[in-house]
Length: 353
Ligand code: ASP
Image (cartoon, rainbow, N blue to C red):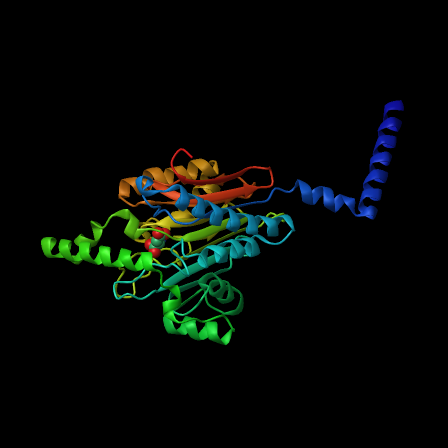
């Protein structure tokens, strides 16, 4: 009887404390600051060769990765959504000539730029994607508009550009995306391709011989916000010297981008044809959801086993609903960075960094 009374008074006291916390508004602060939030970004798996990396180049890449990841993190810390955070981070990389997305996008075989992007919201499973646009300054902004203000998931080419114009997005001339270093890459890639095509008498076979650095490079971000919602986004110029309206994995939901609050959010970079066929982003989330294995394990199996056996080079960044982050890649490097509310932040380019 005595102990029942004591328990009752403890209960009473806790209720009073709880009530006063709610009244003072501090309970929501306690809960909010306890909710983990984090962001991870990549600037493509087509990292320049370690042997060609100079301290100046490294510094430039690291500074831009830091700017992008910090911009997204700041929004998350302010209580903004994971969707807003990934857009902010991706747009900083789209505007930088260092990465193959937006300004600095690679050239097609015909010396133009054709851009792809996609976004997915892990709470609603809404998604938006755009492929083959030539004049939209921020393809990720267009993917978001398609997700939120159209009845479709993916728009391509002229229709996508018309939609962007109707929605008041910034349009630019195609040469806005030009950079000298990407043009030089195109010239080198075409020379190699034509030589190999003559030797092998087969363009597809010749294309397979192009070194990885011509094939990969993209930007992407994944995030978990304080409300427990995941989002993923990817934006790219595709592959150097791509032909005939080629679309890669970046705008394909489930291949280059996927997000689901029940499992994880993933953004990929790599040889898109493999990422499409192996449905890489969705496969990682499905393994997590159905096999109940940790994110790092699911991501590692898909990138370093399934894809390696298939011959597909590249990597991914991923985050789960608890804020765990995985960033595996099977290429020589992958520009990547992350920042979490647990105080951990990371920037790396090559292996063992
Ligand atoms: N996945 C992109 C594509 O195939 C390129 C990349 O990520 O490097 O278009």
